[in-house]
Image (tube, rainbow, N blue to C red; front, side, top):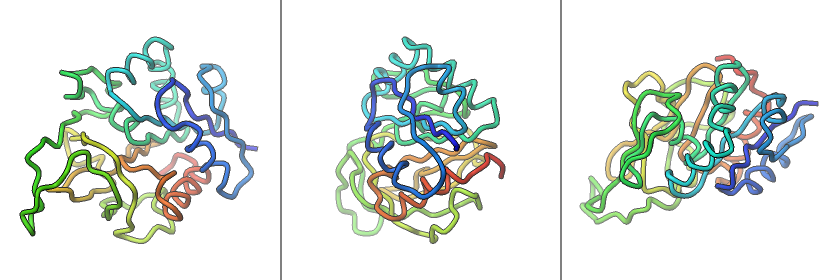
Length: 216
């Protein structure tokens, strides 16, 4: 039986993520843990996240889970980042007057700002970006298996990732302007949206993660 570890660092809707993972088919068990040995022994690892980046990185470092995430990333086993978990994988975030992040992906996390408008209608757009939005799959990947192009996923965020180059971009969406909705590199896949809030499409993404061997 495969084990999927959801990293518990006190931030994020951990149990919603765990419940969604438990709901998908497959011979696996889901473990919510802050124990380094348990996480490193798991077959697959999820880094979730909700909240302010300063708090997220502060807790990851306090619990020394930042080192664990790096070990998982380098191990070759599948690693999934969700929402702030994806943002934390960048080098630096503009949130909270600037926060150094994990640096797994070159690039930054930037704010949408308050002057966001719809490029077609000119309508003022509220921040945070909250609700359903189409995701364009910009890279073929096993994590997109059985998910149709331009499928809608559920977003809640005021910041977006800006990779240093286009290479890791696996999905994009538009809110005022095109922004990165998913990134991928080797055994790592990360999404800005919340699969656990995205109905059937989100469950399919989690099912794909449970099946994925980390190879592209």
